[in-house]
Image 1: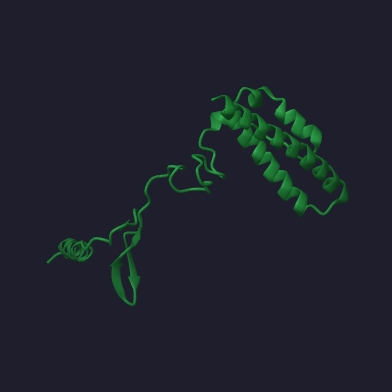
Image 2: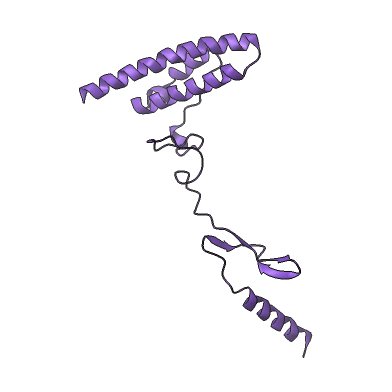
Length: 158
């Protein structure tokens, strides 16, 4: 028996032993197909991933919303947001990219700014920044309430 034949037989035996499939929901690792544990060779099974659709698995999705909080599902729909001062928020809300959005999307952006300012205000230690963020928080709260009123008015007309 030659060395090549012996290697071929060993490969066939390993394939036969490893022909056992992984459990449901698992698949063989694409590069490291086997692993050794306790002196024996086993199939290296890893959890199977179901695609990378952001609507399915990544980020948090608020109840009743089709959008995820931390995933940019539609980059063309993006509005860059600054919120450290009242002027920054005014500039953001007066951008053409903001004004061209539907009322529903504008409300989402206003809500996002409101949440970010609220958290930033709570976390900052610098008194000047805290003062700026407090003023910004008051301003965006007024805008949020105005947006709520507009939504009610629009729903009433329908």
